[in-house]
Length: 303
Image (cartoon, rainbow, N blue to C red; front, top):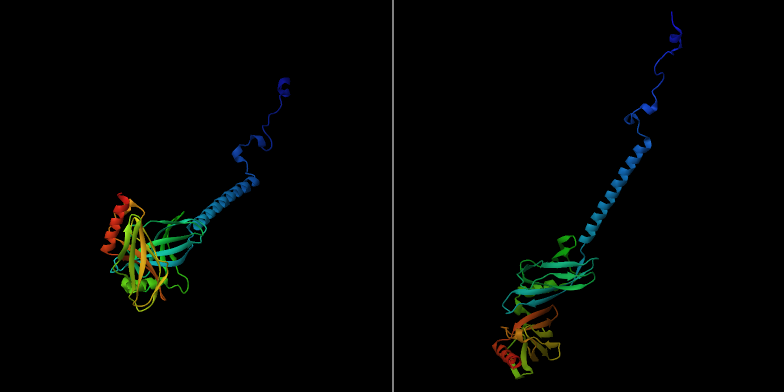
């Protein structure tokens, strides 16, 4: 028989129904859909930004590597003495690109490049003409097509570019023909010089310039290439017929005593024009002129 105390105790049935959400662990909760899409969107944005940066970097690198050079005129200077087959080519180039570049060297097809002790790089700003020199020897078995292999340095590194001439431009052909015909084929010779007068103010020397070719030519310019001196001449240009000789009066003065004390050869450069070419020939003047210039240097620099 139950007592009154036992009847008053409620019956314990335990937990009835589903477990409260508050009691579930954090890892058991499903991930909201907006979080899934948000994470994917962030990844796509990061990928797009990286792609844009990489693409811009590639475009910048390509732009910095772009080289646009256009070839202008070519001047030729033959070696001294005339028996030498070497030539110095001066190639005029303009940088038509958007950025500054450095021209390291020029190789001319149809010519063999020789060592140049005065070689150095040339900086070309956008829109600027520059003059690049190269000592070469004509390869008489390969007619030049008129193209150059130009080694340049840009912000992205070094590269070699091909530069072509303009249609109808035969200057490299003329230089090649002149080299293969030997420098004497230009027809210009400077004979035995004659001193007219000399004192501390300068020396007046007559240069007999001969045209030994079968065609008339024009001497367009003459200048000394003797270190430490300057030279002026009669008014130029001077026309010289085939087989003729013209006496050209020159006046020499000392401009640099240090250099004049060290020179070993008296030379002049003669610019020549005829129907087929424009060229520049370096000519030695011989011992009489050498002795006269030494005397002039002594009078000017040791008094």
